[in-house]
Amino acid sequence: MVFCKRNRIATESALKGAAARLFSKKGYEGTRTLEIAKEAGVNEALIARYFGGKEGLLLAILKEEDGPDSVVDSGAFKTSADDFPEAMQGLTLREALQVFFKSGEARVAEREEFMRIALSRSLVDEETARVVREKLIDRFRFKLQRGLSGYLKSAGLNADEIEAISMLLAASNHTFHFLCKRVHQMDPAMADLSLSILAQSVEAFLESRSRKVTRSVTTNA
Image (cartoon, rainbow, N blue to C red; front, side):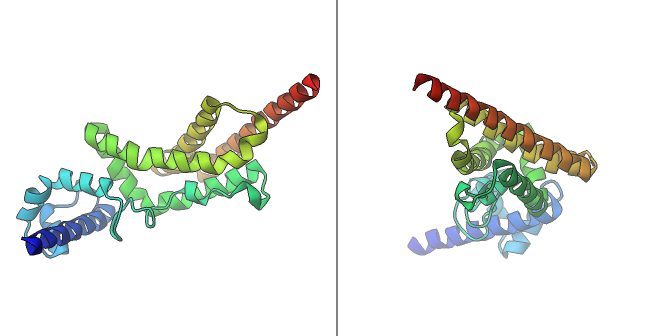
């Protein structure tokens, strides 16, 4: 019984790894379950038995948090939020945002096909949308807020304002690097200029808030 359980775990892991690689190369719709089974070295029928079909296999991959073949593994699935410079490095917020946006371009290139799969499935399947939101989007925003925190201390922002800024930056990072550049074929230089203007605008907003905080403290003193 123990052997059978271990064998199933190994088979499921092999199928998830094979599916992740093939989905990234050929897309979700372009990948057949027979190809996944051959890549994993197992019987095709096991995909239906263990996952209920190809869609269930995709969900299992999205939910996965451990293992070298997981596309959302904390060690393998890096995002531009992981690359956000810490405030102690001495960069201005605008410089830090430029690093963040530049990293976003590279990370999109690394995971473009997977992003297409995850987002397209999210539009037609509520469970996929929930998993993508919890495992990818919410995790990304949490990391971004953590990276931003050191730059926002002096501005006296409340929790809603910090959340709004992180959502604005996260959405813009994805919109311009993925949707505008790759899907809509927007001129890359124009997309980069848009992000640069956004970085300047956020920095100007925080500087304005910081001045108000300083005047308030001075007045009260």
